[in-house]
Image: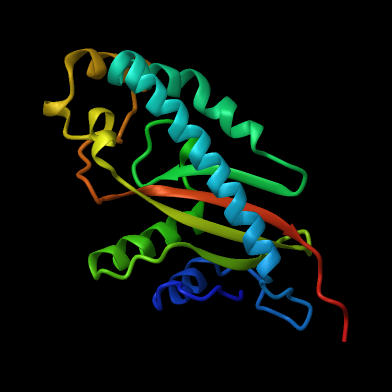
Length: 203
């Protein structure tokens, strides 16, 4: 794997230790290019802006309960709209509310590295790396951390500080919810993008 600048120093070790099934980089491993990273960043920004705009609008219209309801009904549909040929984008959580946002094994390792960086004041803006696939191809994996903001606490703060109506709605919509108890500045998760990459020319 090749890594983009800014990734925490401990992340390569974590990924290599956690991914014994991946092939080692070869002469045909494509390098991370600025165009691919720019495309991934744009996809992450588009999804983040879309979902934040939707939630902010619902908060203003009907408060936290309305935001929980529209997130349950519409967030995954909105996310699907941002999928393109060769580009997958979604949100993942450190503690998930919707099971669809559960990180895969590599994403979980990146989240752990983000969390370690946050505790030492070195949380990167984003990170990217090339992953070899079992099919013989490669893909660019890009992750941008999401930190908890003040307005997030209405639905993700300590349970004893959430409005009763919000708690009831979360319990009804997400009976296995684990996404409460956060504080401002905590690592909430990440926006993750996967881009198909061509093989490097044979030498």
